[in-house]
Image (tube, rainbow, N blue to C red; front, side, top):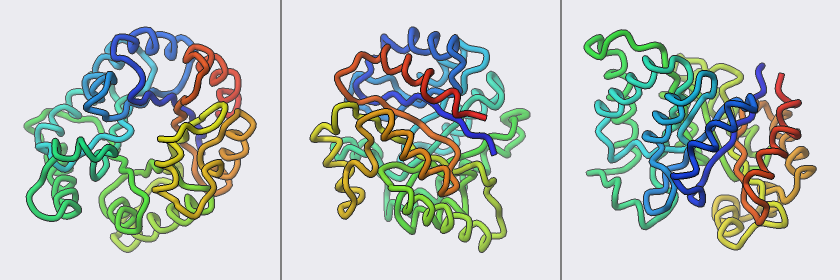
Length: 276
């Protein structure tokens, strides 16, 4: 199975810095760039960012980590994805989630009725639209989903092509992978063994208060250090645990006082040799 590492950009990275980051990742041979959805921030919109980065490069893959689907019109999303798939085949990597991470942004993606049901229906409509020949010949595009609760694992098994988790220790990641595979089998489907991944935040010098709070909210009974490494050696140990749990795709975010350029230098030095 292919082990791959990508760079994630959070809310702290200004849109104006994106072109330089994209050029550097392409030149360094880094596998992928991942763009988070933070509306009230300086960060680029993930779909606009994907289009810009894919047009600027020849090899770099670009994904959303994660974009909210419920509250968006699925047919219009399908048109966007079909366009990206045609312009940059196999390099657009959409990952969708249930709701924004930030509570104050949730009203921007409102739905009528239960949100989980709206997500399921949006996924069905998105799949159907991508198969519609009126969009033209659309290269096969995998749809990955986020989530960290049993209902999410059930949904991924029924509708997704892969899983990108976050803030879970390796033991929980293993259980999640097994639950997703089981749900897929019950639905008469199969998710490829190397389509399980994890977003990891490297907080050199220790997790800041907001990040620690987010980690505790997701997994109250786990030590923050078990999901948010504070050094490269700690990150390597965490990655070893994820690999043993059957995960092979990783998005690494930088949080800390070190300049982003230094993080990219270290990312290239530390993680590219671990790819196969």
